[in-house]
Amino acid sequence: SGFWGRACTGALGGAGAGAAVPPRKPDIPVPYLYVDMGVAVLCASFMSFGVKRRWFALGAALQLAVATYAAHVGGHVHYSDWLKVRMYSRTIAIIGGFLILASGAGELYRQKPRSRSLQSTGQVFLGIYLICQAYSLQHSKEDRLAYLNHLLGGELALQLLFILYGLLALAFLSGYYVRAAAQVLAVLLPLAILLIDGNIGYWHDSRRVEFWNQMKLIGQNIGIFGAVVILATDG
Image 1 (spheres, rainbow, N blue to C red):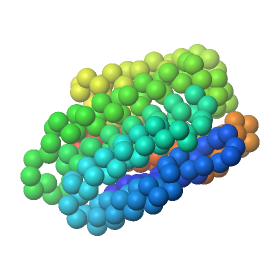
Image 2 (tube, one colour):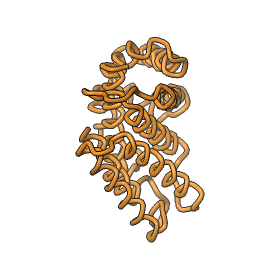
Image 3 (cartoon, rainbow, N blue to C red):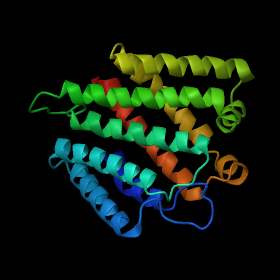
Image 4 (cartoon, rainbow, N blue to C red):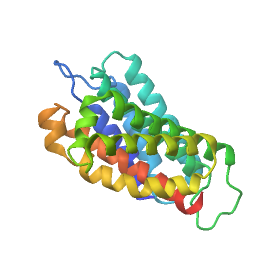
């Protein structure tokens, strides 16, 4: 569960994230930022050592939700709309991943039954993330160009990928064929991380996404991949 240590790196990345408008300020006011980082590190540490993993995964989901809400209402977040979709959708997916972990899914020696309600909620969050991915492929010229630079088949391939994301979102939202959908997504995500997120020159130089924000987005996608692998093997 090492990738769940994102709770630490995500908090650090959030502090200096994004294509912000000068003057630069942390997304969360500094006194609360340190509290947020402390809670994130605490939850990540206990989850990594397998101590009360379900409880601390639930705590990490709550911590991330509160931090995101605080950043949003605090008035310090200044990003382009397309970048907000990328950032917030991945945050939602990471929260969903923590809920899936909190449900007991993926445990090798499960001593008590998994919580189906927590797992279903986590799956819904992943479905929302996929809807945002599909939305970006249609309405964000930045995301469209990032994919078109690597897709064979151009616009046709992009539309097929849009349909695929929509079908996968439907599976997660409905609760049907979740394992099969997770297996497909587990194949797609590494390619997206490598070819799309990993294109630092495009995002940083051309689209003015700050380097550490892009690193945070890559780390979040790795965390999402971990949650998907859990569902693909223990869905």
